[in-house]
Length: 214
Image (tube, rainbow, N blue to C red; front, side, top):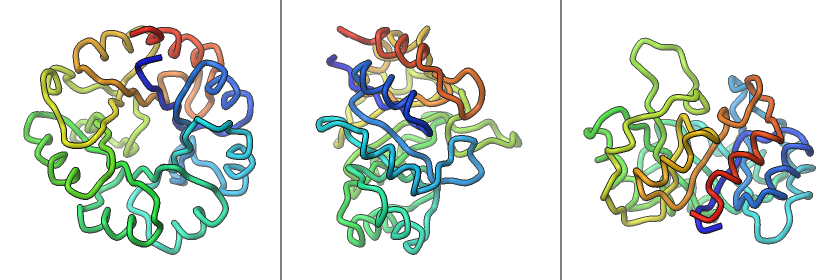
């Protein structure tokens, strides 16, 4: 498929197999205990062994300390580290230097003023990910909240690094998201779950099918 898809928050073999069989180019594992998708490094290592050549593994972290990163990276082979917290460009550079793994930085978007952070992050990050900023005064996780932002904010824009679109994506709106933003890569988590933290293989298949051929 011309649109690459990352299925994030995988925790068990059945959903991993569905992602790979459906053509996902990336599979993501969450290492953030407050999330219902958080996975132990030992289990992620077992799943990573099932990932075939050509599919990239991604580890999602939220403002991690180096000791925690070392604890996980020493057990799980990653092609990409995803930083989904408040990491500064300086911190992104530190992580890259310490672990020699490409880094994707998540940018939380609520309005046009938030896009400036993408240009700053792009100076050091290898990839960008645009996700929805949770509404003010709402208790929410850093990602995986099923919330979309105004996709027209990205329409016609170009960025100095490859990027993914995330936030509120599901089988019913993935194709529209691609058409509106021009995204060539999508990242989905809660949109392919039948309950928080539990991926539905059928929803994974439908999501991947919805953007096949775009």
